[in-house]
Image 1 (cartoon, rainbow, N blue to C red):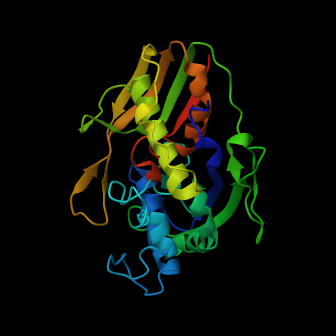
Image 2: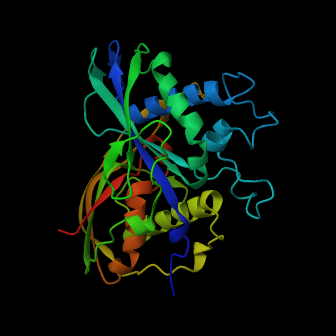
Amino acid sequence: MNPFPFLPYINFIRLRVTFEAVEVVSFYNEKGTAFRSCFMEALMKVACNRSLKKCDFTCSQIYRCGYSQIINSFSPIDHPHHGNFKNTPPPYIIEPMQDAKTTFYQSEHFGFELTFIGSGIDQLPIVLCAISFMGDKGIGIGRGKFRLGAIESLSSDLSYKPLSYGVKPDIISLSNLTIPIVDKRLMIQYDIKFRTTEDNKHLSEAPTFQLFAKRLVDRLSQLANFHCKAPWYDSNDLLIPPDIFISKDETKEVYGKRKTQTMDKMMKIDGREGCITYEGNGINDWMPLIVMGSYLHVGSTTSMGLGKYSISMD
């Protein structure tokens, strides 16, 4: 019996977007939040036929316009689980390029990777238009202006190729991914903060394999159902091997904060980064899920790039 019947339904595209600074562009440490805010503003300009500056929740198009489908990601009112999931996991991820540099001078390049899952792929035309407008809005400290340099797309062989005008990116699914075989030892490198809660409290220690696996199942099964037309999956009866344990913990708590568009105060976005080694019987059964999660992230605040991890068997 396939313990993860929702995985084959999941499909996504990934774009690599490179910008060129027209004037000095300077970020705070959380580049993902800045990219997301800039993208949201440009997307609102392109998608909203009422020319609003912020989404109006009394709008009759709230369930239909491209902006709302991507950013708000409401569950359909007639969905049987709408009461518990009024907002679904957003069908997109903005992942800043991984470098420590925060200031870019004229003609220097910077950018991000942008992933769209399932129904989010349908909004590609307005997304590409919004990306082209982002530089006009400016970004970061002082709203430094920039221009679009290049857009590449992840192809079915998992390499990046230039995205030509009018050509659709390859759609990636589980069949395109390489699933490694592991014995009893797996290393997970949390590249961008893994952020979640346990017992309604922020998790400030290394996640057990059981918690990591549960958060993966919850996120990926909901993405599959709400955005990829997979049947609803109830994870309550899923058995996660209890004897898989943390044999080595090299993670640390990394602190961060961001200013939200709807709140005046700063919001904490703390989480764990670093390498953690899990050992025990049964890890290999979870590898399809873990590999898919390495592309679609895990935990909360994934739309801004958090929850990115890589896999190592060494």
